[in-house]
Image 1 (tube, rainbow, N blue to C red):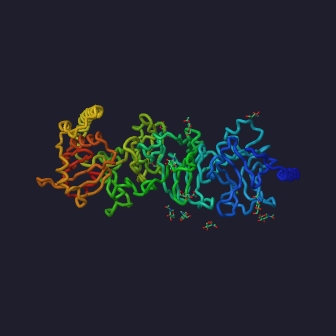
Image 2: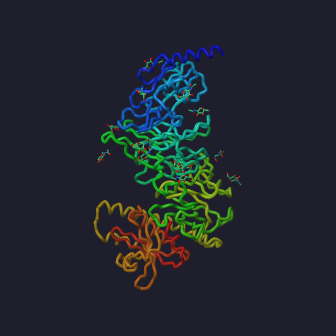
Image 3: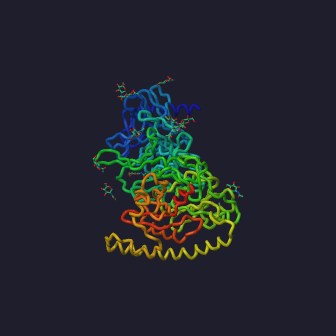
Length: 591
Ligand SMILES: *[C@@H]1O[C@H](CO)[C@@H](O)[C@H](O)[C@H]1NC(C)=O
Ligand SMILES: *[C@@H]1O[C@H](CO)[C@@H](O)[C@H](O)[C@H]1NC(C)=O
Ligand SMILES: *[C@@H]1O[C@H](CO)[C@@H](O)[C@H](O)[C@H]1NC(C)=O
Ligand SMILES: *[C@@H]1O[C@H](CO)[C@@H](O)[C@H](O)[C@H]1NC(C)=O
Ligand SMILES: *[C@@H]1O[C@H](CO)[C@@H](O)[C@H](O)[C@H]1NC(C)=O
Ligand SMILES: *[C@@H]1O[C@H](CO)[C@@H](O)[C@H](O)[C@H]1NC(C)=O
Ligand SMILES: *[C@@H]1O[C@H](CO)[C@@H](O)[C@H](O)[C@H]1NC(C)=O
Ligand SMILES: *[C@@H]1O[C@H](CO)[C@@H](O)[C@H](O)[C@H]1NC(C)=O
Ligand SMILES: *[C@@H]1O[C@H](CO)[C@@H](O)[C@H](O)[C@H]1NC(C)=O
Ligand SMILES: *[C@@H]1O[C@H](CO)[C@@H](O)[C@H](O)[C@H]1NC(C)=O
Ligand SMILES: *[C@@H]1O[C@H](CO)[C@@H](O)[C@H](O)[C@H]1NC(C)=O
Ligand SMILES: *[C@@H]1O[C@H](CO)[C@@H](O)[C@H](O)[C@H]1NC(C)=O
């Protein structure tokens, strides 16, 4: 005991004696008083005391040294501000970093339990402030395992490159990023970013304890909720993102810049309730916003309820997935979600099947299960076996796809994010049209097996034709005329349709689908039609359009809406359906 006290006294004496020389390290015998700083070797980061605007509170934190706009990336005592400038940062003999006030009381301290011989504090070039044992060789600064403590394990509102967001499963350490309360106050707000700790981890933003935004689980390439379009992360290779999830060790997200001279950070902003990735623009001397989450109302957590798709430009914003209908008959806008149009009956022949959905953000993974080695077929069997299983998908979409992910209970927080890529198989009544009649089922199967190859051939032919056509840049107005034969569908001219729909009058508008508005119209012969006018922004190209037309034409069936024809003129692409007075028409057309 006496020896212990003696060492403490010696320790304290050492604190009093020396100050830090201006380097990146602080040893046991040194202290860092208010007004002095530590600077990382490459002079990227600086550690020191600071105040915010007109507040007198003092904090210890890390900021960029090589950027003129003071950007604080870490605060040690965010919830314990200092009231004056007489405090110093020191290391105690038991290997902790502490803030000692004038009368030598500990104001703030780290909580390590190891008892190192010669603890040393070092500010690394990455912005990581570490406590390590001085005896360890130079390699120890690259070996996280050897750190006694590191600031990267206790993030504030900023995720720096190389920082891990998420779990160390062995120690139970959960690294989360929490916004400052406001611009003047770095204490923890209630807007938090972290990784869920379940079978299929994903990034989540929380408002207090409720989910505010989900990234969707990692699909091997990106988070399944990330847009797969031309703005996608994969085609914008400024950063490398990774999600590591090994069974017993870790589940974390991290990123790094591909070009190390690009300075970029991710910050949580409580005021805007947004997570923002910003990039430093040296020429302009400012930070520029690069990405933000959530992007819009559809990107927040589950705005539409179960089995619904959310589309910002559509009206209503929430739309049921194909094969589903609104739970409540009232307006679907931000409502109760959807239910199966026909109830499926578990393991009942003809009433239990799956429908494949393309490009859907994968549902909330709270009630899910994964197996990395299963094939998609095994996955389907696994799902079919369990009556609470509602969907399955490949865990990893790379290549031909691998692994199995299955979901239980109602599927929530869905959204179409791309037109290709990840597939989700949702459990649904086997055939929506003829369930009991086995003959008809067989016929459908026959159509499926014969039509599909034919359609494929036609499609390939058209695709090839258009490739060649584009190559030769034939700029003729009658471009589509040559396609008439292969389409086997009457081609209407624009004037006819303009006439029939009263020049696309809003009175005639029946609704709005994902690909554009639908209008009611009357042809000169008195026939009532519904016109689906593909919006130019729909992204549906000519090939996809032909594809749809051909498939619709081949699938003429008494229970399906009949396709009467189409119209392609200039930018305009339209499909003409038989008008069904029944209110549920829209659900046939949107999907
Ligand atoms: C600390 O604060 C006092 C009074 O506010 C001021 O005179 C002094 O210069 C400050 N010291 C440092 C190191 O900032
Ligand atoms: C800080 O200064 C601004 C204007 O300079 C003032 O509006 C604000 O109330 C001040 N905040 C505090 C906490 O004093
Ligand atoms: C040390 O100073 C702090 C304020 O700086 C005060 O709250 C605390 O009571 C003092 N402790 C002792 C033992 O004097
Ligand atoms: C250290 O532990 C104490 C008590 O468990 C806690 O109040 C304090 O916030 C912890 N400090 C840090 C920096 O985690
Ligand atoms: C650590 O690296 C420095 C320079 O990089 C070198 O001078 C020193 O000898 C190294 N120390 C050990 C223990 O390897
Ligand atoms: C949040 O963003 C707004 C607008 O960019 C900015 O004015 C504000 O300072 C930010 N708040 C924090 C805490 O960074
Ligand atoms: C966060 O949750 C609180 C309490 O539930 C709510 O009042 C607030 O509007 C929410 N904030 C946002 C941005 O949704
Ligand atoms: C979060 O904080 C904001 C203001 O700081 C408050 O309006 C909101 O209700 C809080 N949310 C929760 C869930 O506590
Ligand atoms: C990285 O960016 C800097 C400045 O933008 C540029 O000069 C350099 O060539 C880039 N390096 C690589 C490997 O792309
Ligand atoms: C710098 O600012 C100018 C004018 O504000 C802008 O036109 C330019 O695009 C900016 N440069 C970058 C790289 O953002
Ligand atoms: C995952 O699937 C493989 C192949 O079907 C099987 O051998 C293995 O036991 C499964 N693992 C778990 C945890 O179910
Ligand atoms: C189906 O899966 C759920 C959730 O994992 C599980 O609780 C239940 O026991 C399973 N039922 C069967 C029949 O395997």
